[in-house]
Length: 114
Image (cartoon, rainbow, N blue to C red; front, side, top):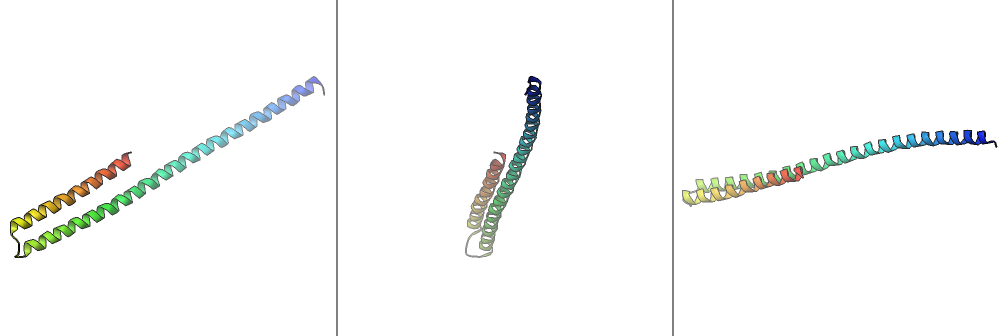
């Protein structure tokens, strides 16, 4: 093999390697884009699950609030307790339920923002 033939062969190999490198770079870029898409999809799923969890928790707390309201209302309608006792019971129960709902909303906001 002559020197010129060796040079031509090396140039051909270099050209093939450059083509392979370009193909690998395209594949790498495509893989990185797919990874980012998967990360975004995962984040959406986590956000949806957090929203469902928060919704379930808030539904439970709202049901408890309604139950406390119904109980206080029933006490008000009954003649066995004074209006002051019922008012205090109602106020304390509703304040606690309201506070729990507020805390749950703040906790869910913090989960989403972090």
